[in-house]
Image (cartoon, rainbow, N blue to C red; front, side, top):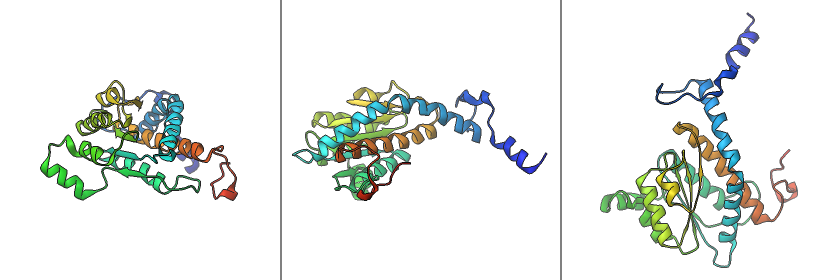
Length: 231
């Protein structure tokens, strides 16, 4: 077999791989199984694009409104990094040049995190920050691959008490975080890595919807506005 033919054999997944391997039967996924898991789970994202568009419009209304509201975001582990990714896209930019908007990642301020963890129960880690930084009408985005992180659920409940809209990105529904949130995008996959990868896609769709609403233009806007033109 020629080298090129061998490469084709190694990189072409058989059609039977559309069935996702269960975590109950193995401890990790092969390369092809991982890609198949992601391919199948992305259907969850496709089915919830309209919800993410609504989230983008909601964020635009809150952050550009007369009260100039704020976005708060939080998660644990890899979800903490994605929460920080989201706030960075709003304070900086996603694609288009536009004004910066107030967005705070509750996992990024280490002094507050360690002080709260030292002095209060673990469930207060995000909830106390929500109470400190959030205002009536603000938005809190919480990410949890399981949807069962106690500190995320506590933050959602505290936010609701403060009049803050709670949007959750989770793994499979039903789960406690989705149940307490005002709205949730739930990824139907048993694999944590797959859920996180889909959350990143969802975050980018949210940012694109936010930009489209803020700029009041199609996402395919002129490059003269310093925007990456979609081709």
